[in-house]
Length: 237
Image (cartoon, rainbow, N blue to C red; front, side, top):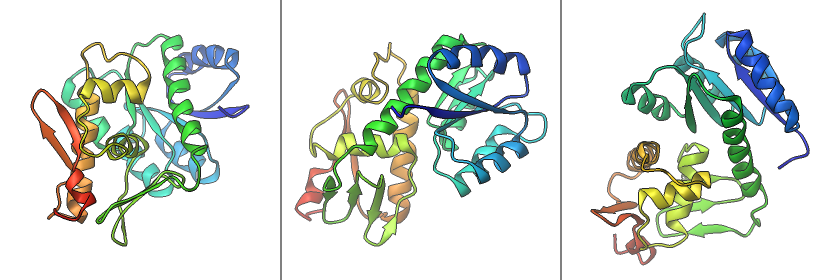
């Protein structure tokens, strides 16, 4: 990781920020803080944090509204902090463009480790050689710039969606279980909870289909998992 990383916490409870900062300071992570959504948007408009921790229940506007505005001006990764324990609420968070979510109440050490994992993934991508570009007949995946194009159209992917597509496209035709994808993304065992992976793959498919509805880029086989369609390599589909 960089010598110093800056994280923005958007949280209206001062005690949560104060406690989290104690842990982040020990890891040489700079934790900036704003207490509402509008201040978060202004901050990101003028600064470039490496990651945003975004509370869903803010005093002025919803965290879901905030992330939509963030995505209009920045590609910074966002992790939701939420007390909403319903599965659908968590799915909605991932569908809105968040990389991950952490349920409240959380232990600051767990949050610190989650942040370090996401920062590590971002740093690893920044060291990929410039020649690391995958080109198929219908899609180009550029690791250096973290961009995906279908023809001349750029596909707007989150970092996690891009990473999943890269995992599959690096080995076309090979199936990856949702557990295997989880472990490659977050460097830990899924413990059977792969809902986040399923939502990210669903989002990824929808974005690819929106631009090229006549092609199937990601295929699924029961009890096998997901694969990148190897037939796209020879132009047969």
